[in-house]
Image (cartoon, rainbow, N blue to C red):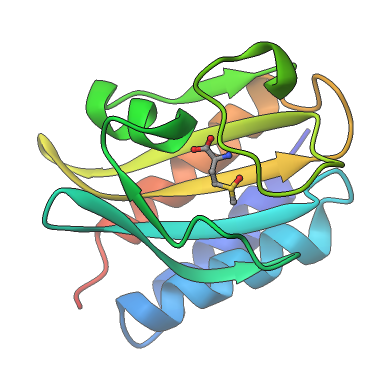
Length: 148
Ligand code: SME
């Protein structure tokens, strides 16, 4: 379903001159192309915290997230994608917007190291499935290969 879109985003990420430009490009294209992506952002590991980088959507109060906090912290600690169909039923959830209903967080890994993660919120309940996971994991792999 997302094959053409995946190709478009991967090509744009690969063509970006550096990691920061690639992150911005990924956020811009994901937000523009996918109507159910209400908020799209990238967090970057700094020490033992996730620090908000480029994003589109309402400003989030969570600009620095410790690894033991939030769905974002859980995905980084577990080094695994997390999909939450109903954020209000998940005790880990750190609220960004009252309208948010579901979330996907995909770690950006280089080997065993977590460089950061892609975080997407949706105002739709259970908005994220296998297509979103495959798309975002491919984008995360492409981002991990970019040089700072
Ligand atoms: N919901 C995230 C926090 C980040 S905001 O959604 C942008 C979490 O629970 O970790």
